[in-house]
Image (cartoon, rainbow, N blue to C red; front, side, top):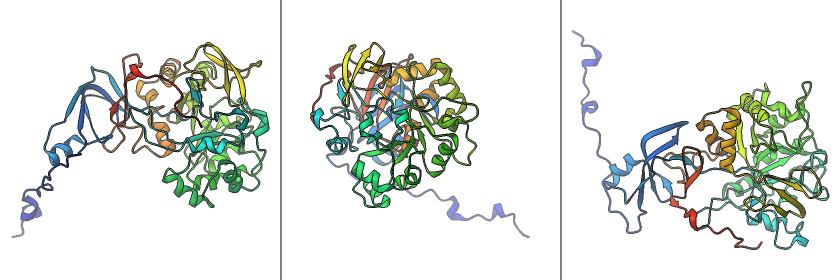
Length: 425
């Protein structure tokens, strides 16, 4: 008689699972473990309640593995008081704040020749509760932008073409890699500052340079451009994955040729690009914000495009070599009606975005966490709350105002922050 297969028992299948790796004594310098309780957590595109966050050595850890292998309790338990905990916000476009201009050396007379010196100070580096947020690198706008959509940039520093391709970008930004592949290696090792380049693909040589820039590990963004829809789609085909401050510094939408804005409705057999939105109610009308969101909700990245006057009183300030005037909630190039960046904060952009679009809290928060992390290809460590990710956390109240901040697992003392320039370029 033949027995059913299920009765042909294999003793190896019914034996107990192997024991875990034997417990080894903890080194004296083993990082302490913090457990955060009584919080709501933005995790896996959901807001999870009745859960906790475990942190060790600046990273989020798996509590089950921690307990199983180390067989000990957390060293510190923090009560979040029911606050919503989100991953640390990622700002994809900011020029400065609180009197600090990221593009300006201490001596304005040497502005042009000190560009590379400025960039050297914006190399990626880890953050801490004492030194501030992690720097992911620099997003550079120009000089390869169209003078017809110059915005708050200086005409004299623009370059009308990149006829020599990658070499022209290498010379301008100080790339040390002789080839795109060599540059990518430097970029992956965080040895170079430039991570995003905004350029106008219709300029001579730019379109053909995009694949090389992508191979060099750089995110290419279309912006300050007069590109028509065909040129914009070709830029995406060549590797561009971002649109800089959508609706600004580009032609207005036209039904026969929607230009760069038309990428939101593109039918290319490629992922549609991410796009930055300055959600201050000034740079982009609330109705336009909703149109963009309804067209491509997975692509929105909220940015401030803030400049040095953010957080300061109304008055006259500098943006690069240009004089600007802050008037309450907006900044203009002095003597003109040209907007010169914004003075809004990223958490205010989140609140406005929800108000303008009626989107969910999850969607709004992902626009400053998961989406920019995916744009930059760092979603395993940034923009998420999961084991292995960096323990950068923002605690928000029910109105989405920031209450507490953690950088690399350490809480920032928000009450003691004294904003000042601590380093001269």
